[in-house]
Image 1 (cartoon, rainbow, N blue to C red):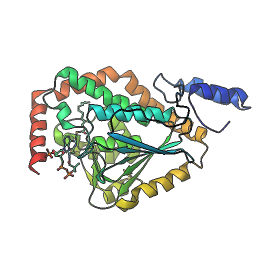
Image 2 (spheres, helix red, strand yellow):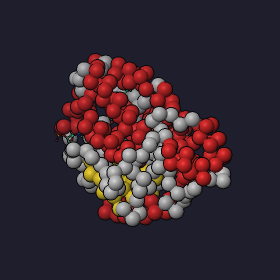
Image 3 (cartoon, rainbow, N blue to C red):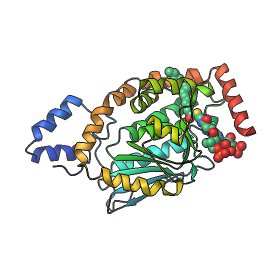
Image 4 (cartoon, rainbow, N blue to C red):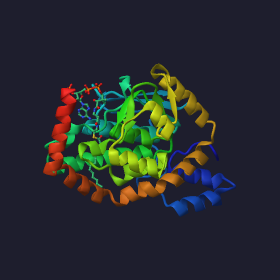
Length: 311
Ligand SMILES: CCCCC/C=C\C/C=C/C=C/CC(=O)SCCNC(=O)CCNC(=O)[C@H](O)C(C)(C)COP(=O)(O)OP(=O)(O)OC[C@H]1O[C@@H](n2cnc3c(N)ncnc32)[C@H](O)[C@@H]1OP(=O)(O)O
């Protein structure tokens, strides 16, 4: 029974042949996994186990068939900023891996060392129509739901800077390994006159604790790797050239734990936040749309962009 979680159908199958089936049935009934839940989707993996059907190359995926470990490399030069296309590609990649029964873990990293991800593409929220930013935000929500709610072991191999949306991606994973050195990570939204949404703030609180998160969020702090390790914002440091290898070693340790028990435990702790966002999705979109299109915020974004360009 403790083999793979392949989606709702396989879970049902496992339950029906398992002596302890009643316990699991009760568990699933109690937690009532929602429509976007990874545990509820039926797998649609291709016959040969190869995945990822995106037509663009902004996300590169390779999978080791033997271990079931996939590496997802963000490839959106120069800084892997998260524009609409990138968000759609990441979501579709996470979902395809989720539905691939031979996949057990994913490592998220950057194709371009030194920058893991520069966060949201600021141009996507600058002088755009309210409808456009609303759609953009929904793409971010959907991408986050698929990563944060994944049954897989998810590991961020943070091989460079990871501000704002880069930190969001890292926080959505189960474990974070960051490159040593001058790289920074954090939720610096307030520096752009933006407010991180409740679901992102909550992941920060869950990872580093209330006081540190409250302070970090208010001042929009970006921390060096060392400080991030000290705060628990990342779990391990490695020389930049070793981040991927260390991540692979760490994943292998995690894969010694039976998949089903690990995934159910993860889902039990993440379900409240996943459900909260699903419930408040439209409200969250409206807030984002109204906030970001406010003239004073647009001026702050413009100034921030000018500062970035002048750097
Ligand atoms: C309850 C209320 C809810 C309200 C909700 C409202 C709002 C919520 C939220 C918003 C959340 C936003 C989260 C975000 O992610 S905003 C993005 C924040 N990102 C940053 O601040 C990072 C900015 N970038 C950098 O600091 C550096 O680029 C970096 C350290 C990552 C890399 O440095 P490097 O020296 O290698 O590269 P640069 O020369 O700086 O950049 C190259 C090139 O790319 C442009 N660029 C960089 N980052 C971005 C970006 N995020 N978006 C768009 N463009 C970016 C940069 O301007 C350079 O362009 P060019 O000069 O070559 O044209």
